[in-house]
Image (cartoon, rainbow, N blue to C red; front, side, top):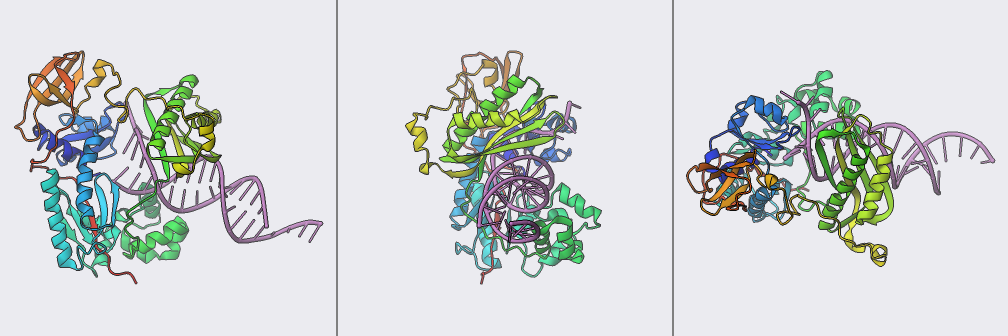
Length: 450
DNA sequence: TCTGGGGTCCTGAAGCCC
DNA sequence: TCTGGGGCTTCAGGACCC
């Protein structure tokens, strides 16, 4: 995720350039999604509780994510990558692997470097943001190279130098080593990649189990044969909500589960899928998480069926003490097409109830006037033009009037119900050329496989 | 005022079938 | 006939990733 969201916001809002920007959930239980490099100086980083970030960087700008806006930028970048090769594997909105050799875009270090530099220039020209490129012979190494390259750089890991490079690095650099595995290894006296190699494969399997042990040992030797996979099938669809305050009322818990089931089905149908296994997730007041699942006889995308299954699953869960998060998911997915003749016969394709808000439901639904002004979102004013919400509350909304290619703008305050003020779509950031950093497509050039 | 949301993969237990 | 074991599926939990 890096600084993508924050860089996009800085490109979109001239007054934030060069400033500490933190994007994430603004509620009492929010966490940081992305911090700009200026905010990282204060120690703010992704996944940090927002409250802690505010303590560290009280003067930073705090914004909620605008996924639709980021997605539109992401699509521009992915299109540039697909022009290089048919083998593009997106990891998220801001990262992807590209098999340059498969596209004939590069065949040796020199051509790869040229391709990478041209790509970075194109990303900058098209999106106004900077991206970093890592070039290497495998996905793991390309990713490590891109980490080293950012912000705004290009790093090549040359064949033959891999083991020497990895050896002194922390085990945490290897994919699949998170806090738990890192601790596990540390307790066994293994801190660096070369200590993994010294420990040997058998010891690793003994410590971490078969799959993880073998896999990690290979990675430590810089062996990574994972191919770049262009099309990944979705395996599950889920939605979840963390509540600002724990829910104690059992009836309310039941209602929330029904809402989540509906939302999940809407997503499922939107993707043209149906599924067999319904999963209920409950995070309790003490952060302990449990899941309950039920597998149906056949795949469904029927909201009533998913609601009922979720309700049955909830019956087996003790929620006394309160719950902080609820989630509903569907896995065991099938193509929607082979489907539900039975459901159709029963006239069971009733519309899934719409949510009162949410990205898809959108603007046309009535929203309380106070809630229409989301911090960071775009607005337009009949007299002052385009701007964004800098804050709202107590019946007032503060707007900064500026556009991606204007000078930093002035701030004005209005009544929340001011009829001259309206919600607006984000403006394209394009001719702007002063992003700070962000997109980092890993570019990976593989040797010929036998 | 700790700890989001949407995913993937792996492991181990238990039940069932052959 | 009894027992053992392998393989498969389902379920729950945990770790990891961005």
